[in-house]
Amino acid sequence: MAACGSTKSAANDSAAAAPATLRVALLTPGPVSDQGWNGGAFAGLNMIHDSLGARVSHVQTKTPAEFDENFRLYGEQGYTLVFGHGFEYQDAAERIAQEFPRTQYVTTSGTRTSTNLTGLEFAFEDGAYLAGIIAGAATKTGTIGAIGGQEIPPVRRSFYAFEQGARSVNPSVKMITSYVGNWDDASAGKEQALAQIARKADIIFQNADAAGLGIFQAARESKGVRVFGTNGNQNAVAPEVVLGSVVIDLPRAFLLVAREIQAGTFKPRVISLGTASNVVRLELNPALRGTIPAPALLTVDSVTKLFVAGTFKAPIPPIAAIKP
Image 1 (cartoon, rainbow, N blue to C red):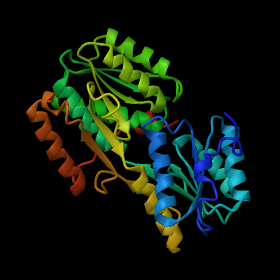
Image 2: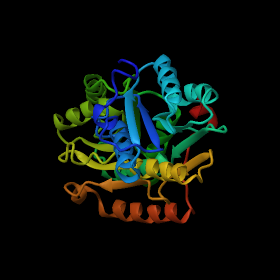
Image 3: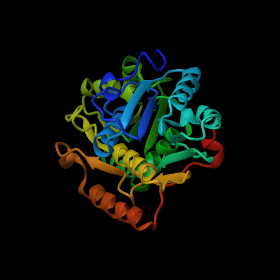
Image 4: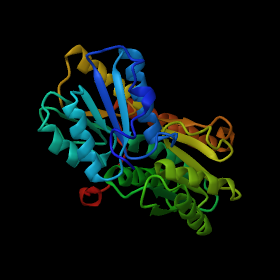
């Protein structure tokens, strides 16, 4: 896909926005039509525009070279704040931030900081653990699945938490894990799902962005299969098969950062947001809530309260298992 300049969203970089001191840009690794990870970030960008009167711009990038190119271009254009939406943007942001000290760079799912670089990480594993509790209790075959876009640390952490949540209520449950290899190939996502279903997986947790739409389709075509949505509320995408969605309230998170910057109080750091801050949550699909065993619902409520109180944390895999 083309670099910045030819793929900007015209509606978000137009004269419709009044001149403002705050200029905010967003780089996403996939299309904002995915109704999940990228769509949520785009909604956050629009919220910054609507709430703070900022001038905003968006570009979809595909390669590391495009990461550098667009980070640099927005720095040259004097943007106040640039979001790189994903773990994969960290290397480029760390390099380019040094060249443009007046621009604040933020990477989501990131943990690196400098004088103008911030990591915005989400405790996605909180919601994944809760989804796992439901999967472990609801599976009829004893086999559940997890499908990711690419095998990166945040996704591996969420899959581990999902599996541990399932085993907390069903110690004998088995989990199949696979990766599409990209974030936007819905056909490949469907193939991965069908392969897992053929191996008896009847509940699938997907974290695959646009590729996940193919996973929903596979579930629709397979009797008795249920899935979980992720990142955004995807319950309405396929209400007949989606048990619930592990939601990251990206608009809320983005607006928190932008407000601090506009107020002049922002300090680069690692910002961690999860269930306690109501940025990460499990939203069940009302249409299928009745199919979830009642004890599992009670357990989810209890564990959610522990997350909020800070007395319980979702398990994460050993450090060696989550390094890139």
